[in-house]
Image (cartoon, rainbow, N blue to C red):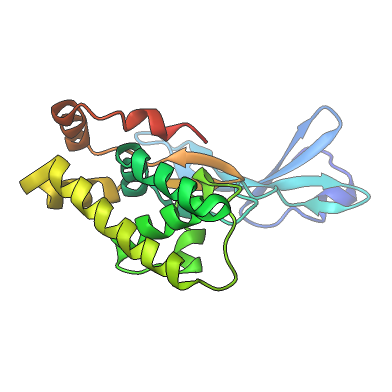
Length: 211
């Protein structure tokens, strides 16, 4: 064994080894395996355990994921946004500051059957409308507008996809956005969606990296 300082060896336990790089010391987990066909044994690294310093002892590695992982509903809501721009424009005209909210609530009602602040929090619409103003209490005109918006979205989707509407909703619902370390990643897009995009000449892909 190399001649390491006592403050380094203090952290050397069974199943670990120390690697010195320059004047720095690093601790790794390891096990031994016999090399097939020989009597020789090799060391196999099982993972990095941290850096050893005289002042702080063993400093564990920082976790690769340092923030909560958030999964956002994305595929279906972004498809609706791309197909229903005129509905959104109407809400912006009639409800001014709350137009984005009415559209978002209509989309969520279409997808889930109801709207809630929790659904909004974990849907792409909250990212697509980052400056959306949310009323503290829904007025009757706002409630009626959300119901009307859900009906108009239903009509648009049914008229666009006809008998394939069930397949389209199921496939696009599989596509999510995942926030890891405050960066957004799109989940893998099912191959069948590409066929739908071509068949109906959708501009949906342009929606993916807007945010």
